[in-house]
Image (cartoon, rainbow, N blue to C red):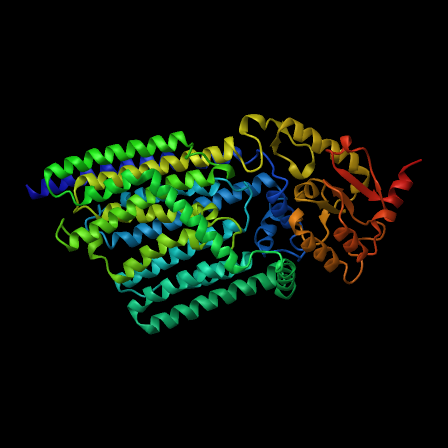
Length: 611
């Protein structure tokens, strides 16, 4: 009889896990397929153009805010400077890292859930759920990869390493040396990509040390030593096969020195993070208070009448929350909707967190049976705490509110919600159903956010239905653009063609038009990023490259593209390159023929061309 009951339980668990795999896998496939379909659509002249231009000349222009060009630049070159190929590479890395993180988490969690089904479907269900959350990487950023991708994926990989360490400690086995070496390599890559990643790296390192103390301080010393060896290996590979560090590091430091006086101070950034974070939290509590209260009541519903009331309150709260999401378009992606969809996802996370806290407290005071979560050890809480704070911490360094970048790591919070759902089976079924339904609803929201972020409101581009015309300039090969944009780009390239051969002509584009430089097969003068609010930074970059004389071939000074009047700051910077803007340059053509831009070419070349 007992054996038959065990078989029935296993069958029910198998059916449940298969259902989770089908639903979560379908939601994951939705955003993955959408990203694949959108890989050849649209092109952003500003941020994406800046990334791609820096990757195109990664080994010839060391002036850069970060070292991300030394990571994606060689890959871009290996792909034949194919933008579509680079976008697919980004998709591959996002999927692969989320799967690795998901497997590492479920492997760790199995040891803390003795009642977990004894089948690999357990791990597969968790991996599919976490992968479904990975669609947030496509909520609003450009389709091509940037340093935010490196930090996010690097942080998830480091956490996966910590989870492998914690699993080894729980099982009483030595931590595999390769896990510690990989952690060191990833740290090196993250620091190269963006030095402010030291904040999230520091947090993860502290968590790793706490975990390793479970095997004594010798294990901690071994872990630190192997991680440092991995870091050294990363530096050695970069030095020998990518770029000399004595070239890359001074270039990065120079640009950071240029912007030191104009960028946000750490104190000002923290104030922005704090104020916008409180605003987001307050908005979430106001809009979803009923659901949050209902989740707590559902946990402590010991008596039948209270369970019935809790169920009714949960249903009401869920309906009100869904209605608010629909009314506010709070499951729609795109940069214009970040303050809305983050409220939706934060509400889901808070439901999981308040349910977990209520379950632990209620178990301690006898309001309900103690759940598996209530018996969690200190090291387990350290890992779960790391997952709770990681999304926001990995976003440190952005000039935007933390949540604009932080919610791209939503997979960490979904992992926490899995831990909560699988750890509260002792509480009333209403509470478990609430967490489960909210988790699924959050993944449905992610699917909607990622789809609309790529197809309806892509980053600084028009929607999918309007991107119908193939781009003709060679660097944009394979991309489909808005017909008017495709026509303008083709006309500009044709107008400038006599001045662009051979490729690699120096071009200065003011402002935020790095994509045009890439499209014209041009090479930046100074830093690839040029912005209207950072004219001094741009001028400093121009002066830096001309410190030892003109960096271009004789007779090929830069072409200048302007979407405004040139300022005295830039005119003065050109003098450092022995160029007199008024004497040495001439307007090429009426602005109607050049996308309403003022295009200036060297007067000497213009004179030769003009009869």
